[in-house]
Amino acid sequence: MPPGATAFEEEVARALLERTLCEESPTVRTSLAAALQKMRPRRFFELALNTLSTSKNPLHRDRAAEGVFFALERGWMDELIRALPRRPPGLESEVGGSPEVRSILARIAREDFEYRVADWQAWWTRNQHRFQNEGG
Image (cartoon, rainbow, N blue to C red; front, side):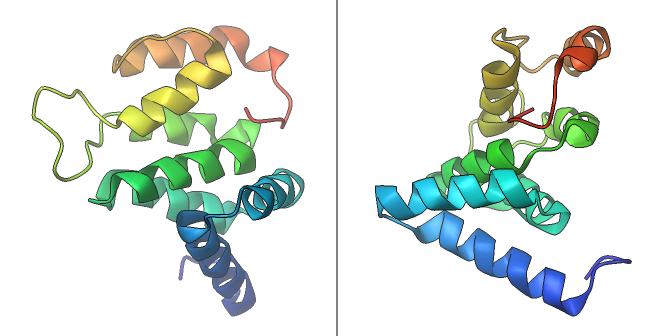
């Protein structure tokens, strides 16, 4: 458990992540997305972001990316960009980083700088003033 997180916050974040990774019902997934947008739990973001770079399961990475997108706070964008080069296990070495992180960034930016962290950071520096806590 990271410093500053309570046992309750850790338990809630882990439960939300587990449900996010495994839920099949579109109705429940929509409700989870709405809850993540309202709550924006920091610990959930950290756990889901970690899943993007450590999980061998592509479905879990896709679902974690969905959760990261909905929980994302504007102040966490630098952390998301820094996660871009972390290639998950099992991907071809030609892949320049996390496809799921790249997808989240492209969805937010409506542009794609591929796996070029410096370009994403420059884009964020130029555009962060335009974003509120609504998916980026």
